[in-house]
Image (cartoon, rainbow, N blue to C red; front, side, top):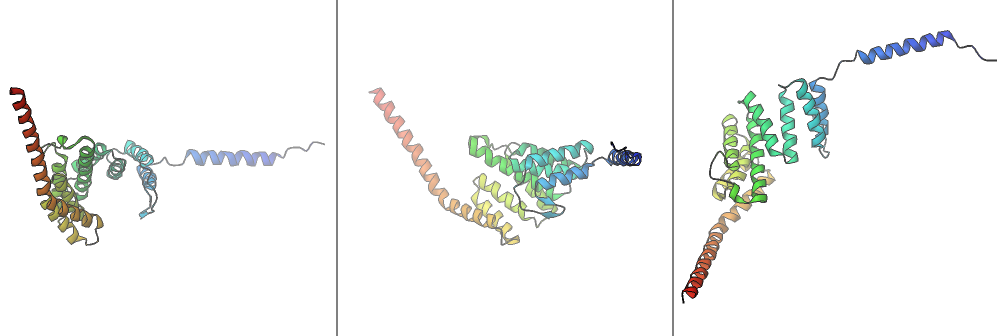
Length: 239
């Protein structure tokens, strides 16, 4: 015989399903902070704690984009998106985000520091890929000079900024002003004697300062030799 279906069970199932649907439909939508936390998790953050994992910058940027769609004035999303762009080597986009933050809060030294870092890396990248001919003498077009300007502004707001001195050191090194680079690295190391990058870069700048006259002398000799060869060719042609 077929068992009759218990109507009480059916009523309970319908009631349970209705409550479940109602609970899902009434759940609050994700806000900008939810997407910020998701983005930060991709960078290795769990709350305020940092977990050392390989950051997934692209995934983080997608979450920050969602946060900014909800709240275009959300500073934290601009900040971490800028750092993510920097991590990807997309320095122009990073600079754009940090510039947005500076315009919103020009009294924050960290925003100038982050933009300075992006300018330094962009200058290094251009120099490595295209040569120094794109590093002009115009302060508005020379990314090393702009990086120095930003780092200097950060020091006005925070005279004990280790990163500001370090960025100025890297920038002066890129401009081949090795003596000033050494001075900046020394100031950085004075603030943090354990800064290994600054110590190594200071040693490199010191070696370059020692070699600079020899390199210049060799370059002059090459030019002179070329001029002599040209003169000889012209003399042979006139004979």
